[in-house]
Length: 187
Image (cartoon, rainbow, N blue to C red; front, side, top):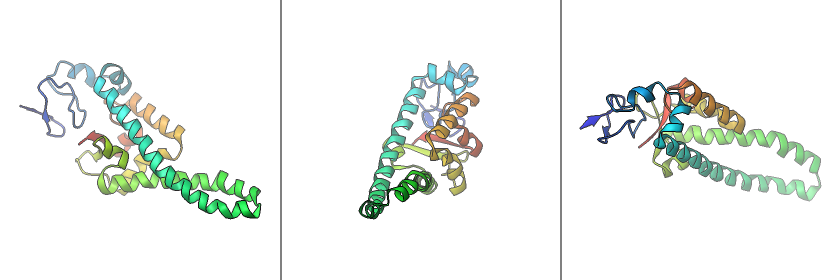
């Protein structure tokens, strides 16, 4: 039996990457070549990497749907007085500016609290994914906050993922993950 040199999990017989943490397997056929590849190059060659990012994307959509549904209900309850008083200008400023920023902060805090307390948001749990540090523990509040702050706006999140894949030799880290020493792994 072979075990991962990074996380210690048992490896399937023909593994080129650890299914738990994504580390290239030493001695595997693809290990030397894939270890030198960027995250983008790995995504084009490794089906597990592609499945991994599809799972992360769907998990994010699940989390966004949950959080934004709750926020939509709260917004509608708060908006009712504006509708009945005819204060549409004030409502436009409130809901178009201040409330949008507040929604983004709540979204980031949802991920921060979920990952720092249990290692995974609801969406990640659906796919048996969790966020871990280099030591294998859950990130603390600050690590979880920094790795999730780009989720305040979709363009920042996209840049976080693109830069992370371009600069890393693995495929499991956004740029903010590499800064904090965290990654998302299968449990």
